[in-house]
Image 1 (cartoon, rainbow, N blue to C red):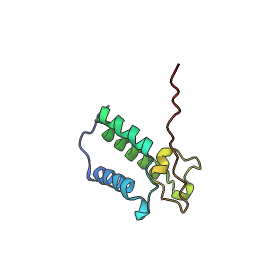
Image 2 (image 1 turned 180 degrees about the vertical axis):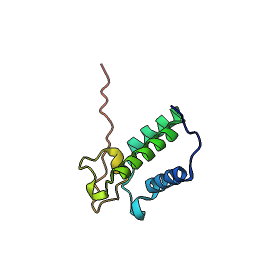
Image 3 (image 1 turned 120 degrees about the horizontal axis):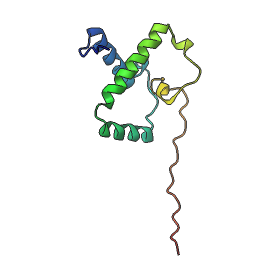
Image 4 (image 1 turned 180 degrees about the horizontal axis):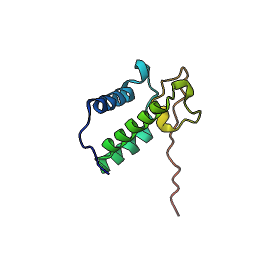
Length: 110
């Protein structure tokens, strides 16, 4: 297998568009608020695995290209949405209430 180590202009554009979409949403629509717990896990994994940002980005670009090649439009997208798909979904009109986090009960052993 031959690995191409230099990006084409089209690949550079695809990466830039993916990151812009992740930051700004589709057509500038608001994104759902970040899940703080998921964000912490992702950041920790990226710190431990510095090349993960590259690997995840290239995976996402490849998957987006496959979907585009299959001709899937927004309306034709599969009904089952994973958490990754929800990252790029525009913010809906109704926002769920924030999760309540409570401290665990600590009972000293006697």
